[in-house]
Length: 510
Image (cartoon, rainbow, N blue to C red):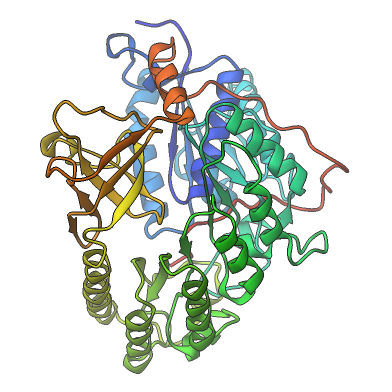
């Protein structure tokens, strides 16, 4: 059994939470801990010495999930009092000392604004033999300056801003994460260039509202300029971003997408509701007609763009007529897929106390009808791609049935999931490599591309991303994850202490 101190970071929620967890892992490894999953099974303890929950306050039943997981760890804590449990993220920022009251075996609670404090808080709790709760109200250090243990050798997240200036009535995130703060373009591009030098071929730009990037330093066209600047980085093959806000989506961004070859033809544009009355109650500062005009503009300049969305069903006061408005927008928008949610009350949000809370059975019925319609649309859109060639960035574990179907999986340029067959005797691509195949079947939620085994197109393009992935498999790090990278130095003036960090939530808060 290993004598090394181990850690286990468990992530709930959005893409920004995943990226924050990469930084938490980097901090712990810098402090001398090793990833529990990286150890050989025979040397791996049942539970890590430090278990960190990076929580979300957005998803339904987030509280129950957290306290249920903490309860499952209690016997391990009783058996090994030296084991430490830490809780961070939005739930920690919201519940604060309540977490220790409900789960006294928790050692550390830290907020969304001070993830860099985790190692010190663990040491302090160990020394003082008591729980340490530290919740900052403003940004302690911009997260990009922290060490990072990235999950992928060939694909990376890059935060361009933190926080949110909107006041959507269903969303608790801004109150927990603070106002929007933008990174300087030079810092962002330097981080991307550093990732590309390590073998990354794909980056996703992250922000609560990426297309409001630049407002803080007075340039409303900054996001489009940033996309174009990404196009000048040698070796960067794919650029994605999430999520824009329809109210701030402008033609300069559409043109930047269309005219920058490495910016992918995919767009995640949260709709939330197709009813203008409900959008107003949500404080979403656009209406359905504007939303659809944006999609028309995108498709005019990027005909092959795949557009996805978020939709909330059963918002307080939603009538059957309102819901039919949502169905009509979904039919017209032709989303390639949609993240659909049943509204549930989030204490602390204006919507929680609104009149007209919709009965659960009505919400469920509408949800089922929306899912059925979107699946019909998604299936038709995917069937229309049959026979078309797609370039796939190969992933290690995208498909649940890859082993039994003898297929590999990855993402097309438009971000659709593709399962493809490798012809017998043909070159097997590595994760991080690219494969060109033809779609043989469009399913509701993915594409099948067996053209290679049918005598059609099958071409592998090895990449620096595949080289980076392969190097990890041959190296001492059996987890297959890149080594910890140091944080990026800050450019220009220090971050004002009055501003606060707020990693973006990919999905709006149903």
